[in-house]
Length: 131
Image 1 (cartoon, rainbow, N blue to C red):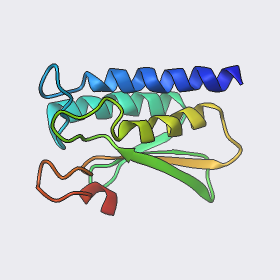
Image 2 (image 1 turned 30 degrees about the vertical axis):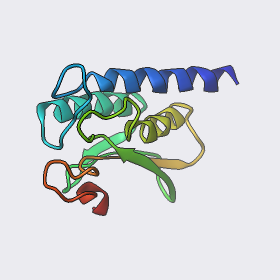
Image 3 (image 1 turned 90 degrees about the horizontal axis):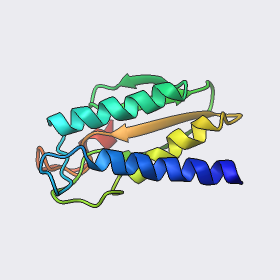
């Protein structure tokens, strides 16, 4: 049980680190294709690769990490935010997926970090999630 508590603490720590990836200091705003979004991708990619996942960016700009092969459990959420978002909005759906893979599960796991779910950049939500 202590391992799970440790992974949960690490997931929250990572969420707080990602909260610093913002276009407006003091407020969390991460718009698709912005420098802050690129920094969030860099950080999440590093965590995925550290968990021995195969990482790629798909045609819609979503960051996807795959562990194992065959039928898989798909987990994820978005990395972009609305203006002045909460620290856990979206990313709290991505971090537990990476934590699960760090436990080396007996099944394949894919973690999807959608890039444009909020629709702030182009005015249409879920562009990344449609891919």
